[in-house]
Image (cartoon, rainbow, N blue to C red; front, side, top):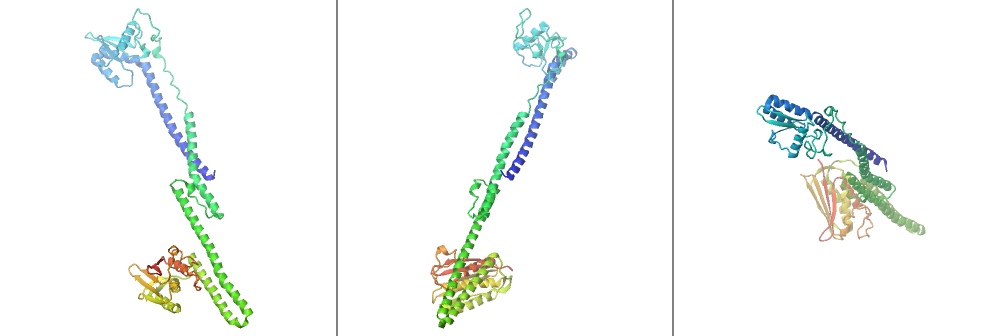
Length: 475
């Protein structure tokens, strides 16, 4: 388990623990307060039930039946035991229902004079009599009617309370259960939940750390997408970004390795020819001038190759060697085509040019000159003898966008190679072009890309290759 796991674990656990303790304490205190209220209410009922009967007695003596009715109505909504008033015809004053067995118990206990303070009979001026009582177990009421006078008492009935019962202090409240068990259960549950949550967050981070370590040690095939599972969150997005980065690094490293291999191969051939020319010059002194020309030609080829590689490396590094400035793009294209006409005569190819008028734009003229010239020279090298290379130029003044299309009448490129012709040292099926280094279109691609432009190639239906260039210019 790493440090991040323990940080997550302790943070979540403490938060859950504090929340659980706070909520549990509030519930426990509320429960105790409610239980204390119930205990006080029960204590009041037991101690003062007989007092309510005495108050009812005074109410009927001084206020008559109306006074007793008002008192009983007031008692109905109070949190006290009910006081019943039943006449000789078993009618309760407030029309409340009284079970016959309860009424029988009340009259029996009154005749026994067992609870004179709690069970009383009062008479009104009109001759009506009311039995006043509170049916509580403390007043002798039981589940069955008590025995009548002269009957043998049953052990199941409540005996009269001892003297001084109503002055007895209240019973102590019941001790509430200890909150220790709920606290221990909540603590254990919070530990499990916090550990699971911390593991859920720490696991992908640990996978990312291991992946970075493996990538730093040279394992470019390292990926973490599978270890993220089905989660959809920021950590999963981070894993996808890592996989994308690892893939880019893998492609760049392999591209550099391939470039180094291609450069070694390109240098080996002219160096071998130079060595062969030196050997022939030593063996045949009369051919020394021809061999010197051969050596000069191969040396120039190596110099061109080094120059192209330096240009390509600067473009890939974002260093073009020149600053943006205002120039005439129409004049630049005219110069490129004019210079290319001399080379076209060597190949027996005609250039058809449809240019534009003088148009001032802001950019890096040397870079664009190199890019468009490379595309045009590539078309001349692959065009059939006696064929035509067309250069069509358009400029959208509203959008400030340059469009250059170069068509040739060569063999074209296999569809599977169209996206690869802009890679360094790529050559199509025609490998007999000795003048081709294989870096021209790669430099053109990166030069156009440096101007936020786009270059793409496609085969023409009638044969040959079409390369289109689109470059936006700012004011």
